[in-house]
Image (cartoon, rainbow, N blue to C red; front, side, top):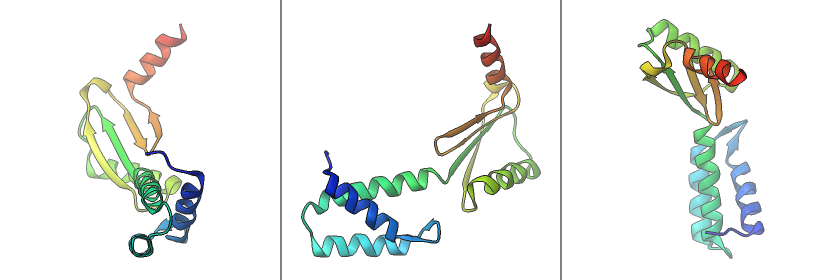
Length: 130
């Protein structure tokens, strides 16, 4: 669905109103969406679509995927999550995966940021540099 500039701007404005501090407030977001559906302003389906996209992107930025070659113990998991919380803030949702092909180390994805400290990644970077 193609969204007009006006609908996109309205969605960004409404999305900005849904924040408390620097965090998205789900209650405010639900209230804004309900009021938008009630009022039915011009091009409101496009505004809702853009608002949904902005919300999805905000939640994806809070998702953390930690891949390791072996199972991490609880202390290591807490240390990794604490370090990420310093950089990205609290409220991160972590998912831990075991990927034996990494050989060792970690690959961490937070939203669109990827930190590859795995042995496999280092070997690939080394091979590309030759």
